[in-house]
Structure formats: C-alpha cells, structure tokens
Figure 1: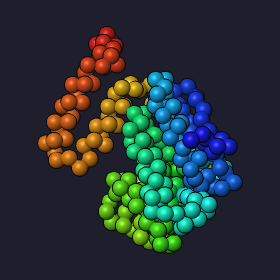
Figure 2: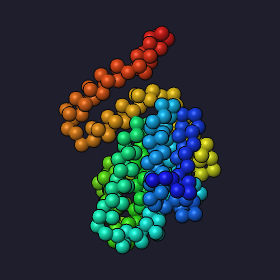
Figure 3: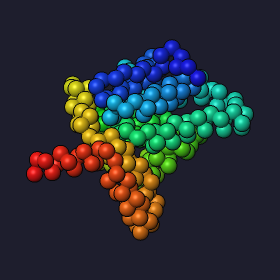
Figure 4: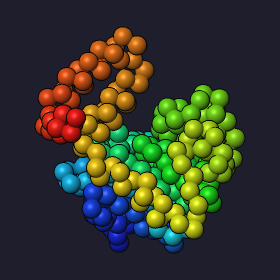
Length: 256
C-alpha cells in the first residue's frame, strides 16, 4: 500500500536513516497508511548497505498516541476475519523490526501510548526526552495490548510488565528508565542534537558485526544455556569469515 499523504517520512543523513511518523495533527496515531509506510521505509533502510542505524521519531509534540479514532471505530464494527487481518499487519511490522539487521532507535518526545508505546519498545534502543510519557491504556476501554506484551515482557521484569499492562497508567521517562524500558533520558532543549550524537558512533561500526550481534541476541532468547552457547559458536565462526572481520584484524595487527 502506498504511503498516503506522506504519513511516514524518510531521510538519509550519512549512515543514519531517519524515519518520521508524520501525522502530527493526529498525534501520529497508527493507521493503515502509517503502518504500511513504516514497513516500506524499514525495508528501504535495511536494503541500503550505507545505512548503519535507523532513528524513528514523531513529528510534532508526540511520538505516537496509538491507534487513531477511525481505526478504533473500524475495530468495533469489523468481522473476525477483518480483525485478524488488521492485527496480523501490526504483527508483521513488529516481526520486521526484529529482522532489520541495523539498530533501530526510538527517539521519543511527548507521549508514546498503546500501540505507540509498543512501537517504541519494539526498537532495539529507546531514547526519551525528559518530557516523554509512556503507557498502555488499552485496558481502560476493554482492549488488550496483546502483541506488544510479547515485546514488553522481554524489555522489563514480569512484575513491571504486569503493572504497566493492567493499571493503564502513564509513566515518566525517568520511571521508564528505572523500569529498564528506556536506555537514555536526554534534555528536551537539545534532544535532536543529542540523539544524533548518540547514534553517530554506529556509522563507524561494522555493519555485518552489528547485524550478527542483533540476530544472535534475539535468537538466544528463551534458549537453554548450552544451546545459546552452541549458537554463539556458529555466529563466532560466521563473524570470523566476514570481510569486515578480516580487514579489522589486519588493521589491528598493523597498529600493534
């Protein structure tokens, strides 16, 4: 599906791909066009060998407020088959975010709620401004943040996940960092510049090494210790055979 009315913007800045949710008048609420645009641009970034990191942000004051009102109206009136298709489309986005080989960084200002909070948590790194707010208010309207539960449970402890999912309350960026949900909290005044400074080092990293590391980290989730080590052996050997590793070792030995 086409990215209708530029619901999602894409820009290259050196090795940084910037994906911007662009529905500020709707607080960047999720709809079919926005989800489709995200998928398209994630594929675009992943297929570009020059890209080393993707930064996902929201235009305007908020990151993403979850599903928009029109989408909620459709959900309430849709058939089982239509609801399955809609839910699977979002599932496909979350799966894609794990498969993208470069790091995905959520740069969150303002509110990241419901599906928007899930979108942030699906990224590999979450950077929040001091004014950011996170929450899963779905239970307040009888809905369940079902797919994002699988993501949240891997981000925070079981007790924290239960608290966030069932109380429907918003938490601050500082609280989210204490929960282990957010990596960094940066000042609002210089947020964009600070985010850029944070992600720039990825431009100097080996794309293949980062890709293998990301794949390994998520692949061993839930594995027994021995199986995880065996998988590590396989990845270790693969890494040794890459051109990046051979060239990196040669440079290191030359300096020694």
